[in-house]
Length: 278
Image (tube, rainbow, N blue to C red; front, side, top):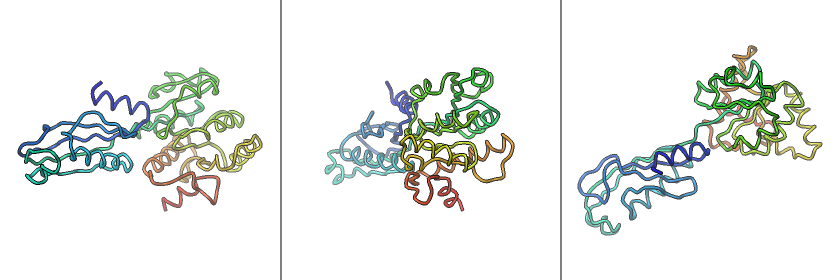
């Protein structure tokens, strides 16, 4: 598999990586312009930018790029002394650009009603791939959600193992009732999802959480729930609710340094996000 194929594979699996490319060359170097090296999240590599200490430094910088999602530009002068120290007797100069490659964020929407239709459309426009799950075939199909990557019209518990939730997943719970919300939430809090949101008032959410606590789930497990879901913009229609929810998803996506699980004042991370956005 080539580097581009590997990037596609990693993104589908929800894994980050960094791509280092030699973008400029002056003089003699141990590689060539446009040479590439891919560094995976686990530190393994594919390809090369010439080897030696230069490559080791690029690897270190790539790890930082993966952690911060910010690109870096490195310049190496392989003059006589530096080249000898690096084991690269070339004498040239090269510039290397290292860019982060993040998986496409995925919104998994539970429930196929009017609000879900709008959320799927708005999320797709904002760069999220979407999956819709409902236990009714009339509410989860490609005709109703043409922009969705997939739709599942099955019992919720049978779909959970198929979803492959990871840290790039955003779970939105908009089912038709309390009990279905609870079924999904019970599973969702045990996943590594970046974002979990549930429709309904805070009173309803607290009621659901209390029921799940009676089952033995610890309160800390609910620290990253966003409920009521969406930013407070006075949304009323399904379309307005979709805008508020996707805006909240974007805020979470663009705040990689926030530890949502560390919320101490409330079991709802929602309060923390609003403080950050002030």
